[in-house]
Length: 197
Ligand SMILES: NC(=O)c1ccc[n+]([C@@H]2O[C@H](COP(=O)([O-])OP(=O)(O)OC[C@H]3O[C@@H](n4cnc5c(N)ncnc54)[C@H](OP(=O)(O)O)[C@@H]3O)[C@@H](O)[C@H]2O)c1
Image 1 (cartoon, rainbow, N blue to C red):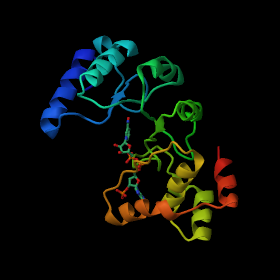
Image 2 (cartoon, rainbow, N blue to C red):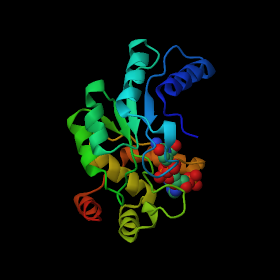
Image 3 (cartoon, helix red, strand yellow):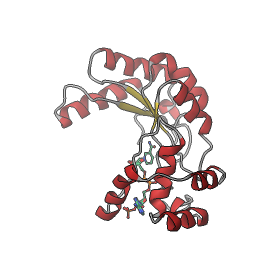
Image 4 (cartoon, protein in one colour):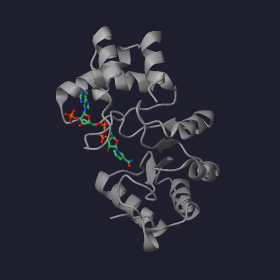
């Protein structure tokens, strides 16, 4: 189910405030449903972006949300949204899937955080898994880290506006993912990884 209409966005924010017991939600991501992955909006769920941004801007002016983020947006949609004041963008992106590099760069030049979903290629079948990529595996062995750590460390080294949200249900993986803070990829590793696409 999508909830794209402006009145639905407001109702969802109000419901979240109540269920979380908060006065303000620090940041709300507007998840567009124009393209895969996920449900595609049709009919009255196909809503103009400006109408959605107006609803979220009102909620921000009322103090109910602290900031507006966007998710699953195109370059032109981000350009259209910039005047509203956007704090973060959450699109699919990882070392093997860099179609959205121009959007990342637009975020960088506008001081907007880039929060890639599927930073490891996800747990879904059909999506390329970064940890299975042969060059990533070789680099991980040489640096004595795991392939997933190489994937995440590359993201942090690639651009200064990247925030990581890897998903895991495994405590060991969680510890590995937190530990990338202290992992530095050398020039050889960076040059191989940058050249993968
Ligand atoms: N905005 C959107 O439209 C959108 C869409 C999709 C996802 N998201 C969000 O993006 C975030 C990440 O997405 P995701 O979790 O689907 O994909 P992901 O972070 O790329 O990959 C998660 C997969 O990687 C495995 N993994 C995690 N850490 C690992 C490690 N250290 N070593 C080996 N395997 C590891 C996980 O398995 P284990 O559980 O076994 O560790 C899981 O199968 C989530 O917060 C999700 O909610 C947003």
